[in-house]
Amino acid sequence: MSDKFILSCCSTVDLPYSYLESRHIPVLFYTYVVDGVTYDDDMGRDPQALPRFYQFVKEGKLPQSSQINEAEYEEFFESLLQQGDVLHIAFGSGMTASVQNAMLAAESLREKYPERKLVVIDSLCSSSGYGLLVDGAADLRDAGKSMDEIADWTMAVRQNVHHQFYSTELKFYRRSGRMSGAAAAIGTVLGICPIMRLDDKARILAYDKVRGKKNAVARTVETMKRHAQGGADYAGKAFICHSNCLSDALATKAAVEAAFPHLDGEVRICDIGTIVASHSGPGTVAVFFFGDARAPEGDPV
Image (cartoon, rainbow, N blue to C red; front, side, top):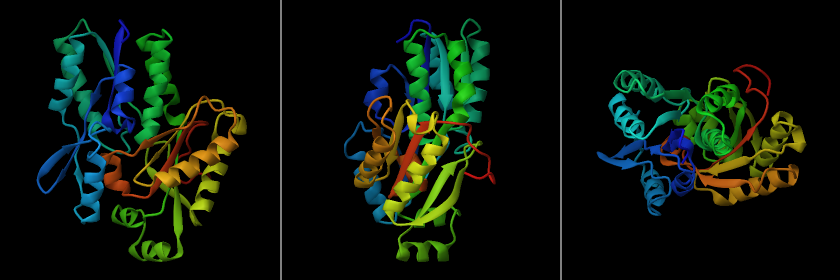
């Protein structure tokens, strides 16, 4: 861990806990509730956690996620401030209002620890796109950049982390109001896959639909070519995550690696965690990469 400051995040980065631990990034865990029992957003620590979650979904028990409250942030931040300055990159405000609680907690603790620096940044990202941003910040930390330099970089590029995803399970998008019941029913019969993205304010937008997974993968790669830094010569990292559909994620990975031969390393595949999956449901595959600024709602993709 850097002697200068501590980089931290929330569990909704949807990267394995072991990976974040290896990179010395402390994590604050979200939770979800089923039948009155609270479960951690496990991040792969317990191999039974995700199967248990999807069994709940299969049984029709809809997990309810909640915000992290101000007191929980205060406890987490205080434990870190006792060790050094803290840069916390938070789950995007388009997904949750928790970041406001993080900022309130930070404001309170700055009075208690005037000798420490505590910075909270709204990532404007979600899932492994949020993870890609935190991973990039860790790369800069390990290269010797200062906390202020990394905070400035994070603010500058957070809207350049693209989130492109498709789903083969439409009932969860119907439940969230992003698709009508009739459209979801017809789409399921016809094998329709909605193509979605995060906009500049970290809100999920469906902007296209195609028939079949093969076309969904092709549309995702096509969009990535248009928006990735350098186009098909993109030389940055790419992450993929999925909700209980590993074969679809592997097919997407193969297509991305074939289309982008200069990637920085192998495409990392991760599980969508329980908090994000509480809203997406199973059957979602997402691709994350650095590119141009994400377009606002209504702009062409």
